Length: 325
Image 1: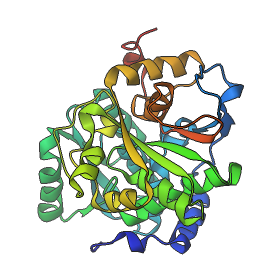
Image 2 (image 1 turned 180 degrees about the vertical axis):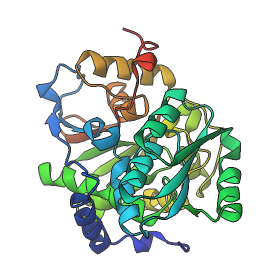
Image 3 (image 1 turned 135 degrees about the horizontal axis):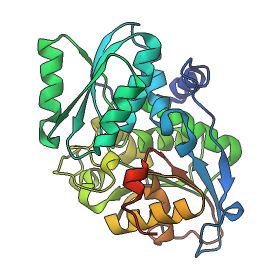
Image 4 (image 1 turned 90 degrees about the vertical axis):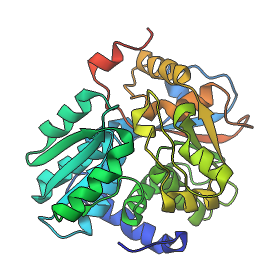
């Protein structure tokens, strides 16, 4: 795919992608959006919060949305390579199995080993190669040049972002004019897609916040530098710790996102535990938006209609044991 700018992501394209995702043979779910007040979760401010439960999505995270859009627009039986800390890789493997494609997932060696196993049992014919985060793109480029594989980007891709935007469209079906939407941010694909869907649908006054870990704040730094930057990202939320912010997500986030706020790993751990105690299994990356709200990182919530996205629930019993009771 050639260079694409933010102008390429139109409302027409998003509506088209919404139908592709809705009718995908991969079985993408229109996940529930429930009022916070119908849970036992603690709440400090007086506002109307709804929680979008993408932890209940097929393959355990929102990533299947973008993958459904990508694979629908690629030739069947292709030979693809991607990089992923786990969730995109799992959806990629699931789609590869369905479409009869071969593939490889290049994974940072900081990701839990359980993620590698998860991908390998999800699909036959998808290989996992674990490498240091700084080497991810080098290995991907080797696969493209020497093995003639096609690179599917896990966050910096127009079709993928348009697929993720379906989540934003679903939010508006339940809450047509939200005041605030809070979304986790790694490379920025989900944040960009949700923000574009909401703003292009006419919600000019909606404030959209991205949430990153302090140790993996590539989009936060990109906003400061006014260009996409990379860093040696480290966080317990491995899914939010890519080596660099995506170029297209950065452009879209600059255009549609109010602010990027930061949370620390202790706040993420506490959020996972709080959610679990209330009956919600959410991984560290998936709990970032919730952590930002409960730690008062999002300004002016009093009396507002707020949406909090729980983006994924791929966490094993072994990992959960490391979190406080």
